[in-house]
Image 1 (cartoon, rainbow, N blue to C red):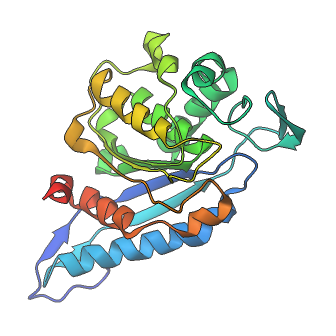
Image 2 (cartoon, rainbow, N blue to C red):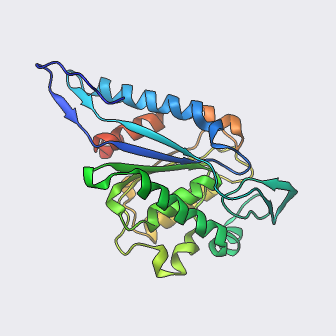
Amino acid sequence: LVSSKHQDQAPIAAMAAFHLFFLHGLGEEGSLWGPALENLERDVMQTLSVGSGDTLVDSSLKIHILDSPWPARELTGLPGGKRTAWMDMPALPLDEQKIAEVHAVDKSFADSVDWLLEQVDSNVNFDKGERVVLAGFSQGAAVALSAALKTKNSRAVAAVLNIGGWFVKDYHLQAEENLFGRPPAFSLFWLHGKKDFPIPVALSDVGKRWLVGEFQLPEQNVFGDQPEGMGHSPEDQNRLPASVTEWLAEVMRGRKEELRG
């Protein structure tokens, strides 16, 4: 996707190379999200090319689909056998109290956050100005969001894409090492369906409110979409709306403020 040949007369829009790291949801494998993420990559690069007019785009978006490195496990609140997971899970539907009582003190959640940051450090060349988008669905989205807040290389994390996830606020408040001292500056897009029963859409609203009010994420950096017909099933991964493509393309251009007109 990196332009290899340019006409001499055409100006070149040189943008940083981006890496998008995606974490799947509970009981899934990352390959389930392969087609949707391939389409997102294609659509974003096409949007960048169209939006540049006669200017040729010299940029790339590399997708890293990550599977949980932990063995399948029994989950406290969800009986029925072992499943792939990034953390333990209480009974559903999830709420603020369960997040605070289970996830904030769950070592497997903390280990998943640290593991994701290790993958970023191993695959991204920050010395060349490469940037990072952390993304995920459900449990994976919660891990990605906390990793963005914990990283010591905050300027390298350009954006977070949260699909049907939640924010483990108290994980960051209980220990100084879980939160970088500088206020976050990444762009956040929170996609959450209004028909999501296991992870109610209200968790999206409260999560964004906490991030802006208590963690000082600039309000102008927060975007989102709450589709009326979207629930919390694997099939929803094929329904990434055009708003996600537009947001990510503007993040790569470095002009996310234009999304607000």
